[in-house]
Length: 58
Image (cartoon, rainbow, N blue to C red; front, side):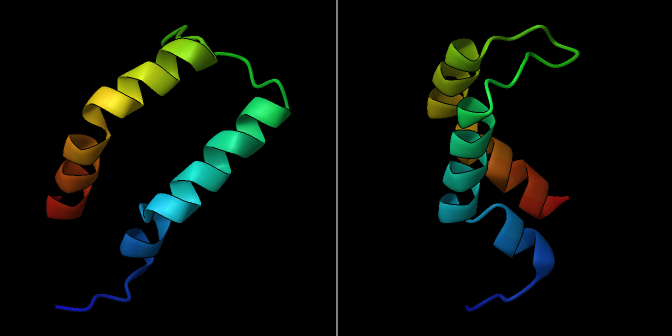
């Protein structure tokens, strides 16, 4: 099944990787969760697929 929706485009691996690299390049600070970029990277490596699936399922 091919999807072309906005949410699917946003959570596409290439777009997520691009966004992460951009935040890292800009020396992005932690958000409201106070998670560092390194911690965010490790968390996303472990939980990214599940998070994306949860988003796509609403």
